[in-house]
Image 1: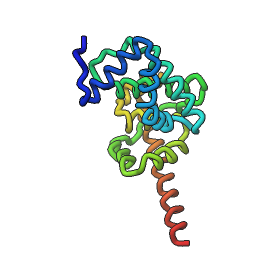
Image 2 (image 1 turned 180 degrees about the vertical axis):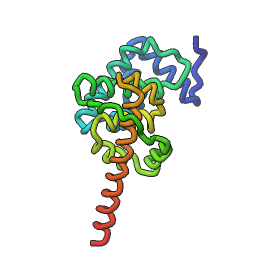
Image 3 (image 1 turned 90 degrees about the vertical axis):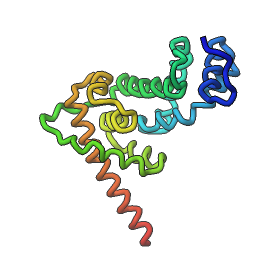
Image 4 (image 1 turned 180 degrees about the horizontal axis):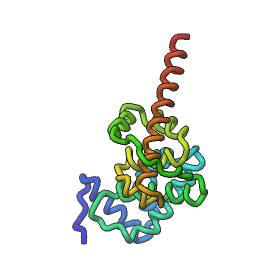
Length: 195
């Protein structure tokens, strides 16, 4: 098992917290939730249409976290493990709610310029969330999984029950719509500055 936790090592501190949670220590459970809930809420907001939906996903996600703690292998980041659960919970939420409508495959989609998605990193996180929430659920989900979670189209297809071609077409359409939204947003910002 794991040796005595190093109080200066965040990974060891997180592991120690998980050990306490596994022993049904309510204080440790509250501490684990407090430690990661803000970051995970930001993840949920990227997939949700609004605050209330993101809150529901967060709560469902943490229920899954606490119910699955015995599956945590103590061989990686606690935060990364929780994040994967949150992403999967968001996907499950939209599947159940039938809000994730994927379009049919497009035979040829130009996705060679997939690196252009990284312009998102130049925006503040609140700006990213506001813009992402304007995308249709299917576009937003594929864009999040591909550009921000680093899943491949093959992995996305498996997660969402779609083909790789559909994943690629959703990404291409999301990028196009996102670009239009950002241009419009920039024009509105500049117009407001000139008044």
